[in-house]
Image (cartoon, rainbow, N blue to C red; front, side):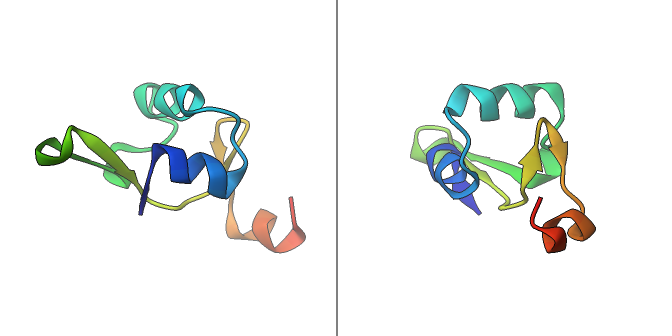
Length: 65
């Protein structure tokens, strides 16, 4: 897991607002996000790639999409 900024870097997402919106809309499922209040509410996000707001399947990942 990584926090919002690391998630953006890893998956080439332009900004953390996009990630926050995906979390709020449920595109990134709640079970893939952990918030740690003791560390200023930092969010850890499971490193699962999404594209255009949809989770990529392993089939898409192997094709390089």
